[in-house]
Amino acid sequence: MRRLLVVLAVALAAAGCSSTAAPAPAPAPSPGAAATPDPTDTRVLTPARGLFTVEVPARFADVAPTAPEATAVPALGEALRRGVGVLAIDRRQGYSPTAGGYCTTVQAQDLAQLAAEAQQALVSTGTPQGTPEFTVLPATGPAGPRVSGTYRTVSGGRTLTVQQVSGLAGPGRACLLTASTDDPARDAAFLTTARDTFRMAG
Image: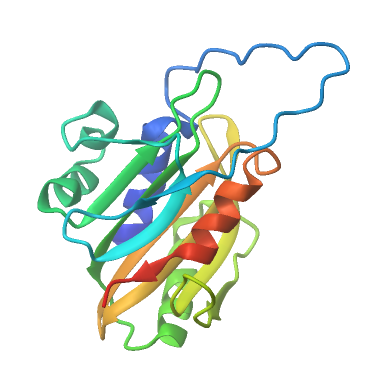
């Protein structure tokens, strides 16, 4: 699980939220103009093998296994090639919120253990600001039973807000998704939709 968390944190940075090449600045708003809200149109994001589903903004583009964002993190690129991972990016000028995840083996046998394992693994990396808390959430609406946690981290000089959600495909087998953005107010719908629509297959 620790390896999974570390790989996904790196993948999010490589995918655009804090890439080594600075993104082009977003056009300046006209005087007195209100901030553009995050659109709510969504689509389903799922690995090729259909292990889990989650809704992301419709504007997010799927990243191919051979794309630079995927090959920058070999383990994630391999997961995409095997059909057990996902990576989607908002490629609009100025910023790139990212959703990425895949399935792996863990020690947890139930969701309570998965929450504890996720928190311990993440804290051990030293990446989050403060101590993240992970909570077991019941099935609600389109979402299934899952573990959810939100934390902040700094990567490439940017502070990122990360919504992490995971579930069990069976004892010792978990699927995890992270939704990351450098502007949680603008992308609030993206973060909450990831939390509230994540569902394991079956």
